[in-house]
Image (tube, rainbow, N blue to C red):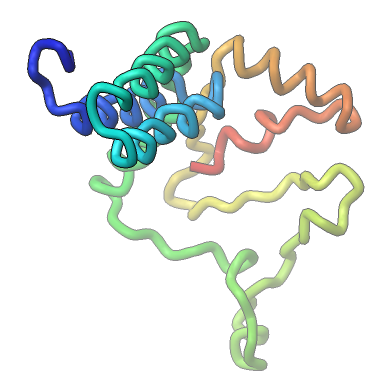
Length: 165
């Protein structure tokens, strides 16, 4: 693209988009790699900076791919467009005043750091969304998370993360 006359910073921006949209959580390091060439390119310019872009391009081309975060985000945006801004459920609202506590703010909230595994079963969604699940991890992500789960007491982060978005 650069040899054809494309602006190198446009190429860098497209790689950042590719890293977040098409590689995503299958290789979270891809976003850092894609973001990296901008600074050396500004520092060195052409022709030296093109190697930083080429290195990032090869990394991104060979990285595992998952658009699960992208599709989850798009689904969440659709729900927001249809349902508008929904109120935050009372159990996860901060209750700094006595009145807020009396109204039920924070009642029943379970602080994840108080639990050994750091995960608790708790619904963070407004009732109007029901049991909507946005994030559906790919097999590559599930394998990576289950490999790390062995080191974290057998609980996969995907078990709770699917509803975060």
